[in-house]
Amino acid sequence: MLTSQIPSRVEPYKLAARHERLEGTVALDSLARLAEEAGPQTGQCQVVLEFAVNAQGRREIRGHLQAELSLACRRCLEPMVQMVESHFLLGMVSDEALAGELPSSHEPVLVENEQLDLLTVVEDELILSLPQVVYHDEQDCGVSAQQLVSKADDDTGASSATNPFAVLNTLKDSSTSKGKK
Image (tube, rainbow, N blue to C red; front, side, top):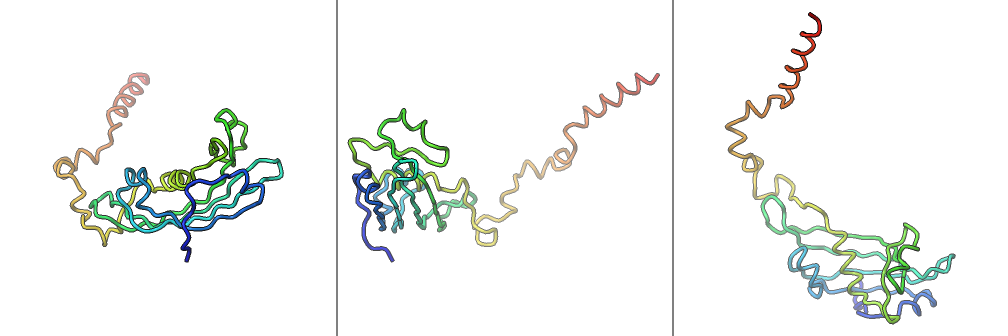
């Protein structure tokens, strides 16, 4: 179990020159933008960051993070635990214009005044890793399949089963029959 907290700010160029590895946790309740996206969170995010200089001389950060988040089920809106995990490769740039020079395998991370806010990096990766939709298994959800069916669909069941392009077929049939005469 990881118990050390990841530092909030580092000097990434020095860490890359020494091929340093940071391993620790980030408290999920300290990430305000994550709370805006996914609701208030408790617990820890486990983080591993490896700083290096690759063969082309680019300074990079290889990272992995993992956290259990409480996300709202889209059917019943009740919270459910969802494991979120991300592997990422970041290329350090000192100017946004340099981001275009990175290979497609790297995501740019802006290093300002030789400092990098690691909490922002972790928070960004967590937000990008959030699943688009989250549902309980049907048997575990507080909303049944019958409750998901709209009453309007029940009333117009026969018309919704008809082909919406049937009119086009009749027009096509009438035009081909006129052409045969």
